Length: 140
View: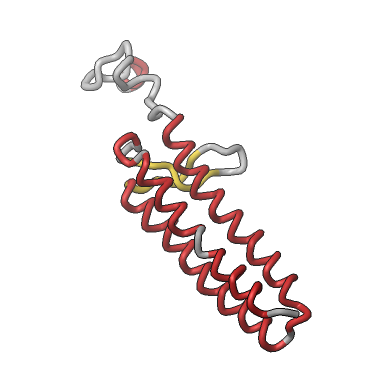
């Protein structure tokens, strides 16, 4: 098996990092300051961070995975060349999920409006400094 094409395939994996960074950069001014980065089983956000934190977290995880899969793929290539294709497939699938996760976080935060309480918020019928009538009746 020719090792040159495997080395190029390993190098090609690293395109995931600049494409993810570009995905954030192209819409940076449109992203909310508070971004959802973690979701529950119903795809409802339950973890938030700043947009700088989302960028650092997303690219940091991707960079770490790239280092791990680069080392693993090259190790497999030199120790057992016949298994190099399998290692590359696993690497590309795992990195593809990570890349898609970054893309999805950016996309979700661009399309979703910030959630507001039903009682307090910009479109609320109740002023934010008023007392809830149910609570005040219970304390009377």
